[in-house]
Amino acid sequence: MKTYRDFIRITTADKREIRDITREVSQIIAKSGVQDGMVLLFPHHTSASVYVSDSDATLTEDFMGLMERIVPAGEYKHDLTDARRNGRAHLMSLLSGHNLTLPVTEGALDLGVYQTVYYAEFDGMREKEILVKVMGE
Image (cartoon, rainbow, N blue to C red; front, side):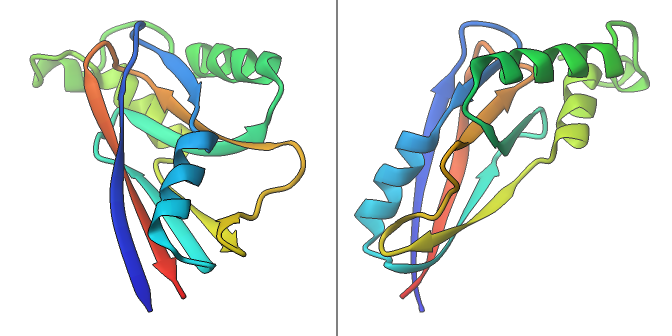
């Protein structure tokens, strides 16, 4: 089995932001040379996540709105022990699914018609990285 490792680096303009990373993931798969296998997306940060959803921008707005309601602004115990005071961001990441494994077929992401790969940042405005590990033949 062949493996290939690369990174997507992202610096968001806002503290909380969602980005479509489908193109970047597809480019890394193409560089890997893997034709049949899978790709693992693993943010190297516990205040971010990756997920697959419909390509409708209103859905990403709804998702972030939902996270804001589920994890409201306030003081969390983590904020008392960490100088970044980002307990809320960590909880949002836990609830949204931290990492993702996707199929690769004929050298490309094997997604449905409207499926899009998103990166959700909950404590941004600094550079973060997503490990992209492509595995297969």
